[in-house]
Amino acid sequence: MPADPIARLLNDIRACTACADLPLGPRPIVQLDRRARILIAGQAPGVRAHNAGVPFDDPSGDRLRDWMGVGRETFYDPSRIAILPMGFCYPGTGKSGDLPPRPECADLWRTRLLAQLPNLDLTLVIGQYALNWHLPESRGLSVTDAVRNWRSHMPGVLPLPHPSPRNNRWLKTNPWFEADVLPALRERVATLI
Image (cartoon, rainbow, N blue to C red; front, side, top):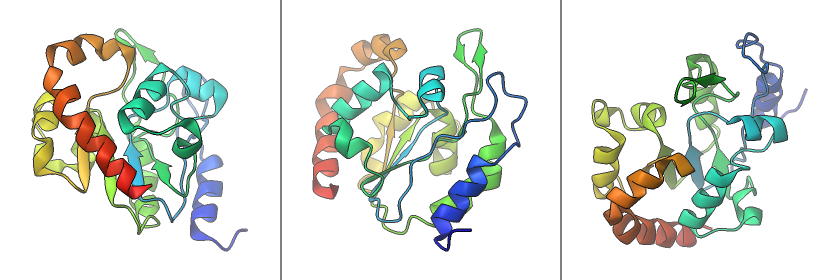
């Protein structure tokens, strides 16, 4: 068994069967290194990420990397960016998209994993489930309202809408996001990587 606490936790996570009933079975997808200064706290991997075993390996990831102003090499360098979704495995599909992340992951692993990331300076909070966990004072707010109040959480936490192409309409009706939030995000990321 590895001596490094993160390596031990990752081994335990890869062996986890708490969600054995998932439609495609468990395939936990996380990216961690204790040196990481940026954390991406998303919802759960999509089916493409599940199939590839790589987080954000889809159009959402392309958009998120663009928002951050980083390329794939930086994005997938765990010593720079940790990726810890609320649910580690693909939850399946519902009526209007992917199902919510299963709560077992957060209950079993989240606190222990976050304790292994002492160098975090920025957490990107993507979606309602991550928002409720990382910014509990924002419970009850819509993602739009939380993102609109982004300055109250910076420089340590930045709520974001999901970068999915399904949110193109949201981006068009909220031009302040691209005009105000994205430049601040790119500037902050550039200082940390």
